[in-house]
Picture 1 (cartoon, rainbow, N blue to C red):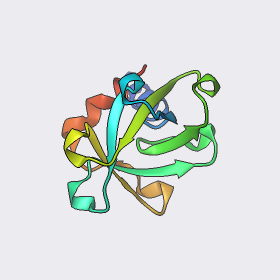
Picture 2 (spheres, rainbow, N blue to C red; picture 1 turned 135 degrees about the vertical axis):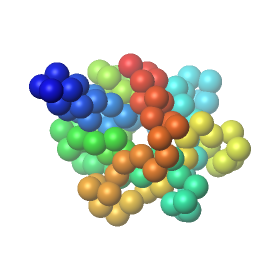
Picture 3 (cartoon, helix red, strand yellow; picture 1 turned 180 degrees about the vertical axis):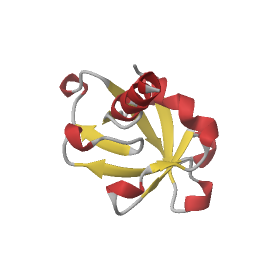
Length: 113
């Protein structure tokens, strides 16, 4: 039971919730992301936090300005074309609202690790 609890804690701390670099080059990005205004079509609810230690759950993103600032990060390309996105995110107004809307994209947090 303790191992299960610890692995759950590590997933939340080290999962898709950590440092994010918004890449302007789709060819070097780990993941293509579309920002939707429709919660029903989203895969992940997202909130941008102010420091990396606030990113405790999936969808709590700490945005870094340059790739050199992040020791473990995911490079995202924000696309305006919904059909080319691998992940659709919906921005929420409170960091406690973050998390997965659909379970079929959960494995994407491993990209860039």
